[in-house]
Length: 471
Image 1 (cartoon, rainbow, N blue to C red):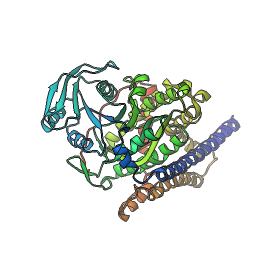
Image 2: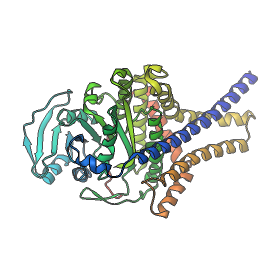
Image 3: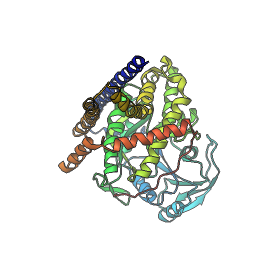
């Protein structure tokens, strides 16, 4: 019996060691592929290209949709920001999703809104619309007041009222760079088979925003937000770019997604039953791509240019809530679409994307918890000394740190490079220390999310409190 237990523990230790080697090797591979994709992207941009896009009558007009629930701290700056974008033709549709604070009143007062009767084509059933407003100051601004139904329902409602063939979905805490739409629309113009696109999302904490304009870029003041700055760099910059290169992306961030309206309508819009709709939307788009191959080589594009800033939690409670429902969101969608996993019909999305997200996004907190349980068992059985366990921990930290530093140093060769040496040093310090507290807390939040979804069946989420720009 002791021999069998020893064999099992030894095998488990070897399997875990292999798991972490493979995980970080894949992370580094995605970073490398993302860097190649970014290099190719920037080499392909021609001098004067954006001016030609601006002047061309063929440039696709865009509907920017912004769902808002209790966003009084940020909504005015967000709307002013998108109203000042450099783009020839677009509309802005804000959906007040049953806010109980002053969101609607602030919008009415700031933009001189007046109620209108609006004719529209109803693609989706949504919660009842109370009123529709237009602005005396901005003719391309529409505000819809409706009963609360969640972000997915609000985006569907906005699409019902949209006029243009491209939908750009952002959150109410987002700030876009002035030329972001030019970069995001470029893949659609260059390749008619591109049906959706996403780009780089960065934390807005630390930005100074006045009247919708970004007047100063700086890193977040608080360390929790700074660790997320580093994480977003790894995840929303290099890893997402690498996954797109492999045609395996399963998560376009809801804070910054551009999609053809006709495709959004064909797939049934955003799923209102999802905990959060962005992961499920991306998986559904991948399903559409592979189930409609007669329409051509349909693709999701990634734009590796700074485009969107979004607020991240800067206190532990809000961070825990966010990562909890993110974990439940991924797990829910993978279970719903499990028929795609390892299925050649769905190409690399099924053969690589699904295993990647399941093994390294869903299972990683379970594996790390198992390590904490297994380590003392191995020690008391004499299979590992304290020195060997310390070396194993150090090895894991070094692998994670190598991944972070690689992502950070590659950033320094892009438009996202830090101009101040002090900022680069702070991020380097964060990459050296995020495995000593932040990482473990993050894993714990995700583990609780798995437990709540699988055991307790929790399928709801609460909106996070807003901070305001400059934090």
